[in-house]
Length: 322
Image 1 (spheres, helix red, strand yellow):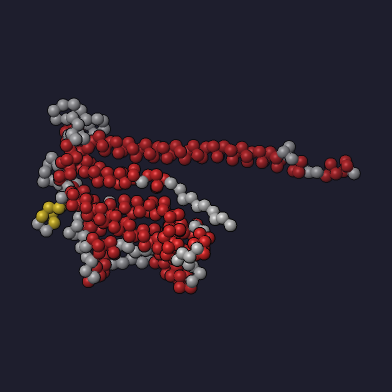
Image 2: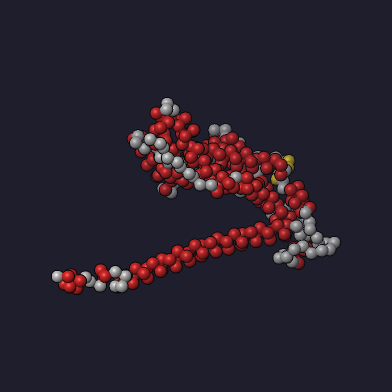
């Protein structure tokens, strides 16, 4: 009987010596190689992209310090020595003084455009993220209500169906409401709670356990207080990321101020007009234009450096006792 049982064991069941064992060994070897190669390739691609990006910024900074003659003679390397060459840090001062736009028979200079950019980017960006945060919280955490489920269907339709509004209709509506050519009006107009920000925040709220809110309700907290003091702090990272993203988008936006804020041009619009400055040949040179664009990007870089730890942080959720 023992010999018959030993004979009945197939080669596949015999262990690593059989075909199945060899196949598993090959799969493990391939998996091990792929796990070792893929991270290396991914890191190499990321490092290469970062080096190219930093190289372009470095190239722009070096050329922003050149003279007009030096740039067209040698646009690749460092500034040359000489009377007509050298390091021209004055290009930034010239570009800053040349950033101005004519409005209502007066020049709007760079400091005023900087203020308009801050009001527009911070106000519109903050309000759009806050409204998306509140709307997504209701739809994510109160979906057991019928009217909330109905609203969710409407939100999906408005986000995915190709529904576009008319520019002329928007201008007419803002004019009738007294909100046209007003920074407060454009902030109010852009505080729509839906869009991609809403969808990202909706997914974030779905990942936060409702047990935290239930524990707060037991302690006597209301719905708004629970959301503000218990639930929202756990999503501060995504809130900051979305706000920075909106700030950068609005900071570089020049079309909206042209159309809806003709009396309040921002720095992006000033930089857009700066490239067509041909009245002063010294100001209209490429090094000065590069210097103006780098000054426009400086606030975004400073903002990222200040909040880089918050942006690079992770959302960490703890557990409840009991």
